[in-house]
Image 1: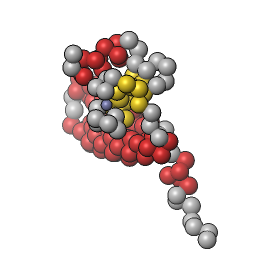
Image 2: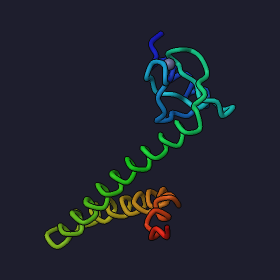
Image 3: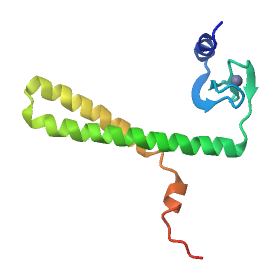
Image 4: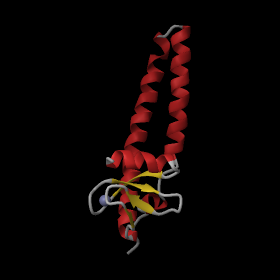
Length: 124
Ligand SMILES: [Zn+2]
């Protein structure tokens, strides 16, 4: 069975796809219902070192920030189109904007406390 199929089967059984990579083979890891990370390619549980996990999280937050910026740009773009639209198009446009704003708001919650702490002036 291919790794993708194995992953799909695990997900169907209640596992969650993560963006963590297996340190051994580079496959995407799934999180089992037990909370364990598992590599479907190596067919074994994977334990990430704390620092690895934190590094990975920092990468994810940076990626999410990129997505958030893209969402923001799209909202602006849709906003600029409003004037030119007829009633039907306007409804679609507003629905899209509403969805995008939802996503934007949710993505905003991924800002870490550290990223705010870093803005503090250095007192040493
Ligand atoms: Zn692996």
